Image (cartoon, rainbow, N blue to C red; front, side, top):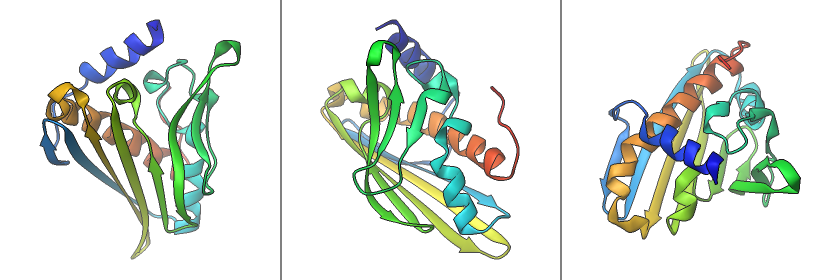
Length: 176
């Protein structure tokens, strides 16, 4: 419970909203982020699957990004191992077109406890000189009527993760 509180506080203390909040209302929102890379789509796709190397440990329940994993196959899991044999399924992989598109379903962070459903649609687009990764996350449900207030926070966290993915995919090491 203490780790959950930490994750919730981290989301709530995030920077102000960016222009990437596509829509937001009392029971749902959509945020979108994109990064351009000077690498082939297959390499960008492979980097995306290595979530433990680029996801910020501050946005995990365990405080340790090395406990994250993502299996890019239908029914696969973006999961986190917890102490004592526990774990969290952050998102479930529901659609895979290798090197081109991954669709994941589930509720990230504190949304898990808000009776919401979410869809993250990640596209790997071929562009001149490389790849553009675009991630859209839509969440809707009960959310106690404050989904619109959560949108900028989720937007900031997703934006941070996409920047970290960009650094990692380009061969760098995101800040711990």
